[in-house]
Length: 157
Image 1 (tube, rainbow, N blue to C red):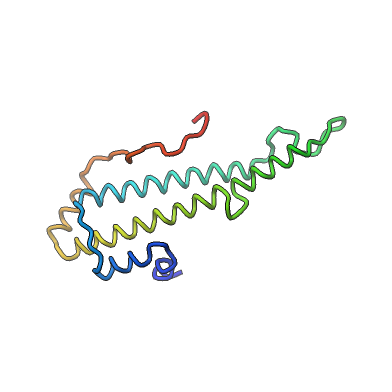
Image 2: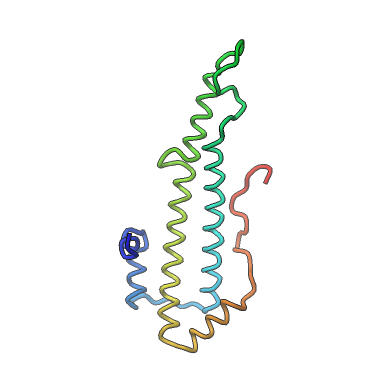
């Protein structure tokens, strides 16, 4: 898929196009562009971590609830099979699974990141002093956690 194909199908396609063509005005310190980009990367990493957890849940062989064929003398627990099936589907088995919903969030964050990078690139490409300043900020600004460092919590983590 070409970059333009991806951009045109995104929810922020019009804003990205406006920014790319210089018709969007954003007033922001270059320092904020650095932190926005870092925050987007942080949240994308968090989403991938959640998706990895959902994949593990989906692929877990046994849950120990009696969902497998019973051993001789054990009763088959239909409700356990049903619960496990639902958890697998909700984790990564449908268009409304946690994995799929997180993927849609990931794409929105990517779109915002593309939008702000496009604006920043237009600013820095028009002014070499601003470009040099941005490169210095990107290299030397201290790392800081996003406003809310832990947006999701899991029991036991």
